[in-house]
Length: 620
Image (cartoon, rainbow, N blue to C red; front, side):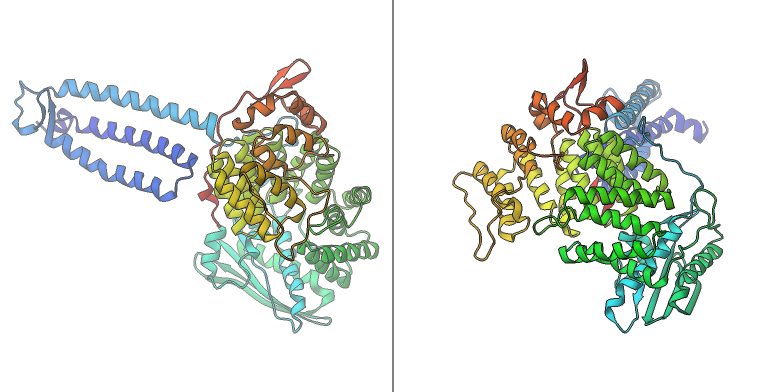
């Protein structure tokens, strides 16, 4: 008998096939379950490694031993009359078929219940991808070599302007500003930075500005070989700053053999405005991002002067519109700008920008924010955010705001898919993590929500501390939540909600009282309430009472979880969702999974499956 025939007789081929199919089944099941419970990545790798090591062992055992009615015996000791190998082979065939059916069930379940859907939203502006991306690049913050250290904003601004130019090129995938600039002053090598940003090429450089004289040095590096593809130094006057940007972009296009064409097929070019006004624009944008009361006020004033000096500068109108909306509220007291003024001015400058350059996605972000957050027109807000994504598919912010809107409306799978896109485009984004945490609290996955909220806090956004407390409450860890809220009060962060937090502590822990620390300011008499925590402790009457005083739906966390299905069955929930514009959105898109149509209205509280999410995937 030939060797191959003997392998068949001993069922070695069948055992190998059965082992492979069963191992595949185990890997698929482990991938779903371990991701869903937020297990570390090494656990899944260990499972796969053990299965791989077991394969040759299974083949050896099938060759050396035979399963008989008396148990396992060495094949050499089994006579042909005693052998039941053919019968065993048929059993293995049935096992293979059963395992294949199991794999199919696992794949279908993963598609239907766990994976975030990336299907386009009905009746919303669809996303399109024009040209295929051919190369990936990151533009790092340029080093400030100016005598005046305060000119750092100018170096950062030049790098960002080059980044924005390249981001308009359809054949390039450009790492976001937040992610790339996070490596400013780092000691990591270019290949290490490129690996973390998942790009092939890196542009780095420096800027020296002294009066009207500017020196810009730039170099393009292939991270795979750590080799310079192009390098040049430009000694020019400030009047030539736009020509320098165009030349750098052109050199990159030539080095990478990429045509510098935008979505409409036009060649990309830097905007041409007065250089001094342009430098002030970079400074104003820098101040606005500092988010302090004085810096925001100064940025607002500077931007007003800039658009008066350069009324045709479309991006300045967009940034000024954003500034007005940001200045509606400050984090340290009274609004800087009344709502009515802020909204009217933001809308005015968005309209002026659209006349000048309708392809700026920031226009639709402004209009979407006004529609959804102020006018409670969620249908219009969704259309604006979707259009912004269509205009700038590699910009994280439109995905963030659309994802948050969809999660608040109950479309958790679609919302989480958008927020996951934010974290793919901008892996170091703390706000994206907090948005995902909020959505996952509604999606019955407090473990993953807690992990993401912790990462958001570690990356610099302390607001995530409240989400951690809500996650602990959802997990039944009341004492842990009490300690977190006490820490918030001791730190003095979010003073406007201090009284609300004290009230929540009294409900969570008997005789808990948190008096202000010495020197800590008392909260305002009319303090804001932490509505998300009110909901988390099950205070539904207080929850609806506080919502009744709101002009628009505040950011919530967990209001769609199965834990609060009873709250959603309360008629007051539909009243709230109607007042805030979400019922109109349901009529436009169809109801979310938790709700059902009921005549002209809807009923909610039917429950839904937990969201799958792996926080490990987006580690910074």
